[in-house]
Every structure is written in structure tokens, then in C-alpha cells.
Length: 276
Ligand code: KIV
Ligand code: NA
Image 1 (tube, rainbow, N blue to C red):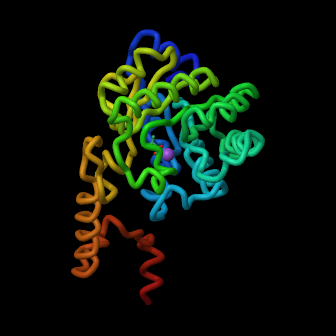
Image 2: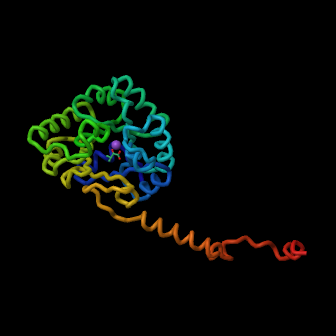
Image 3: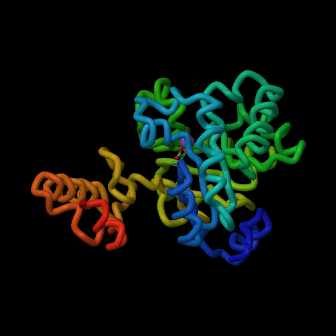
């Protein structure tokens, strides 16, 4: 499969083919996404919760994100690799954002960065895109701001809030974002934003009108406890895995495992001498 680039994503958008995006957090999960032919792999800071057990995405550091991003990169051949800028790594000023985004590309081996926020982030995004760092925007429900949002809630449910979100989307497009994630937004608002923009929208809990879709891998595979309403659980792998581990445990207790085929025999002539 050929390498997916910004140009590939642009072509998919032009011919109105939905863009597929999936999260990954380490070498195996990155390899699986790449092998499935997903066009964009996101090393989302959701990995703080689903892979590291933190209570919030705001707990993860730049160094932890780099460590995970490198691992995903080692399993990624074709997919376009994007990494989340963690909370605290880009808000201070555009210089801080450039320094950390450069680290994400050089040390993390990402090809683009994603950061949360609306028009207040436009100057920062402009600096990043001007120095040649592709930026994926993220508006609507921005989990890094969950404390001030009062939790994981749908955004843009009133006309005033929807209008503010449209302003944010336009400001992000003007600042040079190559695409924008819309998270937990009413379908009509997300579709409207998609229609007025000339860059792709990537929806998560934003309906079918977006230019592409993203989900968190653990959510759709049934590997993480709470699954949001907007996620379709394609498999319940946790049940399968726990079942397999229980069988293994029972086999060890009953000595059904390991069986003869799992053991290394000694050559008969050596064995004869050994047994003397
Ligand atoms: O961190 C993440 O996984 C994300 C996606 C849900 C968009 O930001
Ligand atoms: Na994120």
C-alpha cells in the first residue's frame, strides 16, 4: 500500500470519500491499524486513560507521549501518523508549541500534530503551519478542558454555541489546519461546519455528515470499561481475553498445559546417557 500523505487525504476529501482515522498507542496497536488500511493513525492522548490508567488526559506528559508515539511509528508503514500535543505542551505561547511540536516530529516520528482549542489557538496554529508542521485541529468536546467544561458533555447544543463553534472552525481553517476533529457535536452542526469548510472534518460523536471518522481503538474493541454513546463496539475482546487467560490458568492447575507438543525433546542417544 502506498504511503498516505497530506495529498492523499486531500484527494479523498475532494472525491468525498470518507477518511478513516483510528487511535493507536504502541507498536502492536499501531501495526494493526496500519495493516487494516486505516488512512490516518492518531496517537491520541486518550492513551493516558485507556493505556496508562490515568484519570484524565491532562495527566500525561510530553515525554510519555513521545515514548508512545515512537512505538506506534515503528509499526506504521502506510498510514499518516498524527500525535496529540499533551495538555501543557502548547498553551503558553507559539514558541512553546513550536518547540514541542518539533520534538513530536523529530523524536516521536509523527508527521503531524493535533491540538485542542478554537480561535484562541489560531495564532499558535498559524506559527506551526507557517514553519511546515501540519496541524489537525480539535473543537467541540475538548477533553483536556473537561474540568472547565464540567465533564464529557456534548458541545454546541444552543444556536449561540453552535455559532461560536463555526467561528472556531473557520479560524482554524484560516490558520492552516489540514483537517479538524469535531468531537461530541450535534449532527446538524457538524454537517453544517463540514459544508462551509474547504478542509476535511473528522467526526467523533458528530454524525455521518463529516468528511471522516475517528474512534478510540480500545472503545470499539471492547477493551476499556466505559464506552461513550457515540462509539460502536465492534468486538468485545476483553471478554475473549479474560476467557483465554482463565483457560490457561485452569490448564496450568490441571497440568493439561504444557502438552508434549509444547516441549523440546532431547536426542534419544543423549537422553539414554542422561538417564543413566
Ligand atoms: O485522544 C484521542 O484519542 C482523541 C480522539 C478521540 C480524537 O483526541
Ligand atoms: Na486527544
